[in-house]
Length: 216
Image (cartoon, rainbow, N blue to C red; front, top):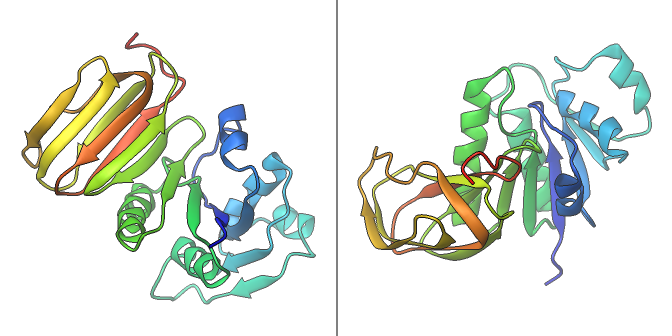
């Protein structure tokens, strides 16, 4: 199957960095409402623009007249971001980048992006959430490697009890560790290159700060 990445442009903060640009190479794009503003900064033209357009400025509206739109009423049962993800999957997405998913003015939206990403990972879709400065990756049972700069900070946020958690190539390694739900034991670790994670059971989020070397 072709590895087709779709980037969903969301309304949260997005710092345009070379690391972000590298992550988006070869991606297709769908914008969710005001997330279209990131298209200008990235120099891309999304293939679809969805939402109720309640947070879209007239200036942004005029900047992309050629992009096909899928309008929804403001009184709808799902967020613009979820609509955009659904459209991406319908168009053949096998991997998703949620750009602008972290931070911003609405903590409820940011949290929803996180739990939505976990549900997508459970369905077999690799997902990266990013603000350009922070990156988040779901961690479910199994193994995953994440390439992080030497000395950069990351945390593992347990969203349930975690069993069999192993973290290698870091300052504070763990092996077959049991993390009770609510524990802060896995906050603020330091990468020593590509970090190896494995988990026997549970649901977690790996939150990395690739440019934060304060723990070095």
